Image (tube, rainbow, N blue to C red; front, side):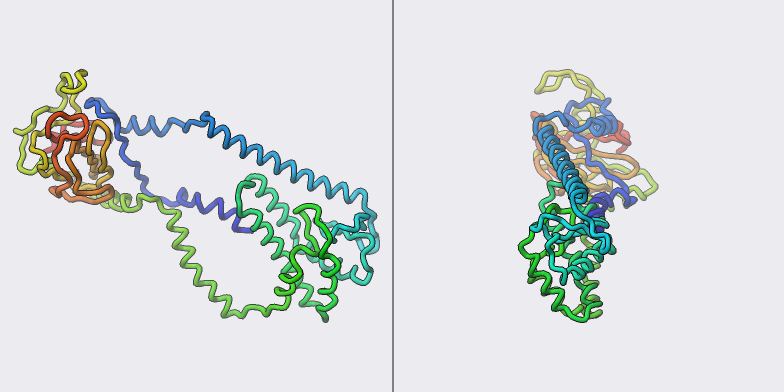
Length: 400
């Protein structure tokens, strides 16, 4: 039974683990605007709710809600059927059970009520009553009601039917074992099963005497109990469960997190070098903050970085230690690399011809990360380089 609440808690366990969060970089459209605030963009995108008005979303939610309503109606009708049956049944005051006129119903218990067909053999009556009273003592009806309430909200779970059946089987095994432990002869108890094999059941809320197949219950009753050593073997599963728990509770970006934590633990601000080997500030062809028309779009722009001339294939290096948070083709940016450095710094390398690293790699200052190119919104081979601190664009020339 604990598996049901645990199945809801474990997927949420990552929320209870104190861990430094990391958001993938927000890559806006390449407009070369100085006033871009990356934090504002990220905050805005996170604040926009998912579109719940799409036809597919409405259909899925509608089907789910209809399922809940139908399951609630079914549960209500099952409960109502029990109260109606109690009202029309004759109570046996001496033995404290209800005699049911419908002889096709199998004996069963429902909370503190016991229902037995009125034509039942008197010789087997005490065996049946003993069986059902143990269901009542073990509060098995509460287990079944809990299962039905769970099924109301998770009716779509394909394993729920098998789980319900397994719980009911365990109920019967518990009661059978309890009776066998206190009975001198099992023969009389087993004979009673033969009379109930063809009798029907009303709903899922009851504990029936012939809950599962005769063969299965006989197998369980005649089995020897497991030794303590056999039970200890199950402890082998504990480390396996621990590994699975951690696997599902740990975010996919674990490696990035560990690298970022190492970098952010440094107290000093990073020192930056020029992003292209063999080039200097003299090779900058477009300064930070200049305005003018874009060569391709013709639109007025404010340059949000610097352009450095170089031949296609020239090596591009990391300007400081950091973690690669993005390395892929990004529209107008072309092939783009984004590196996260300590103290809130971030650098971008655009229009590359190719990469020498992949996302999540940790790099040192001066490591080759890619090659100059002219991909994306570009007319000639060059490197478009940007830098920001805490999401605000800054002039990278002042940092070299």
